[in-house]
Length: 118
Image 1 (cartoon, one colour):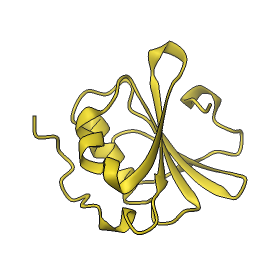
Image 2 (cartoon, helix red, strand yellow; image 1 turned 45 degrees about the horizontal axis):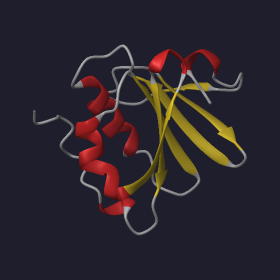
Image 3 (tube, rainbow, N blue to C red; image 1 turned 30 degrees about the vertical axis):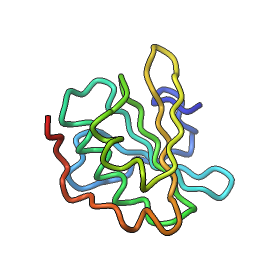
């Protein structure tokens, strides 16, 4: 499991427009991981950063790793049909969500509404 405290040493800071938290990128076994931690953020920041990150997920050789303090229910309701999502509890009760590109589906998601309605 990757947590913000133990990114691989080759992880590089990735500039992402409009993000409110740092994003990092690294490669493992031919897959580019784009990772960020919103576990200390309050709504709507986790949703906004996740939607921005998902805009970068444009092929099967990338994955988005989100660390959050709880399950982002509003986000999952919007995007779950369009991505494969693995959720794992990590140290401190935080959740790690790994979003993978779903062929024929991910390109259909509407990521324009970055706010949670509720």
